[in-house]
Image 1 (cartoon, rainbow, N blue to C red):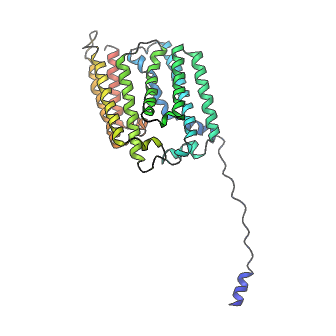
Image 2: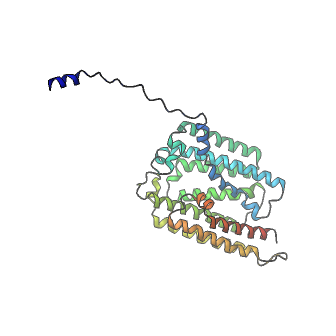
Image 3: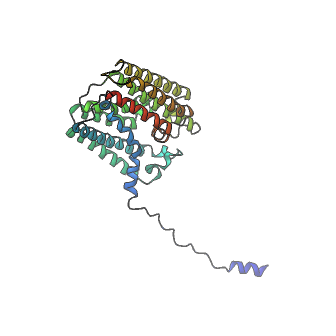
Length: 320
């Protein structure tokens, strides 16, 4: 036993090996992370800038196309600036979310100061370009959108009900700005339908987040602990009803067939609109509408209904 103990004591010491090599980043990881933080998939929302001109049948001229392209680009850069600043502020909360933890800022691919700097640069460029390239009302609306969204990131997202109103107003501004840029009068029914349709989707998104993160204790969005699932369900159901009513009144306002049209396409489009709301409500009721763009892009029946509605409304505008 003594010899074995001596042999053990005489074993050479193990020296620590060389330190593990530092994690190397791809040279394009930072710019790619910034692009991902700007949410390219969310840019589809900015297609709403064509809503008012399309509803008025004003999409045929080159001037219209150029103006809408400028407005779309400015809204995209403004929204991207807000996303960058929002993710920089919410990095800690996002790390507690099962999906948001993969966002570049939360994952550490984009440093928080870089996200802040890029967001501030984009916000400044958006407002400056709007003053140069657009009329006064359009520049004012874009500037108000950026300021409102930044206030939302800093404070308003933590104020009960106001957070829903701010996000809804952002969608409404998108729908209005095409008409403002082209000096097209905006119908009261257009504003009601768009506004409450946006509130329907926003409240359904909050409801889905509340259902999904019921056990997270508000770690991802503190305000979710203040809302109840029943209240959010009430809001999206109320908003859906008002949006449908507003659209029906808007469609019926023009009467029957116009200028010898074959069928009353505007009135018939109510069927497709109501079906689209009912189809989206299926996902809202399941608590699966946390990413509205995913629902719209991935649900094939909803896409088909949307195309049918678009075709009907297009024929109404064209008096076919």
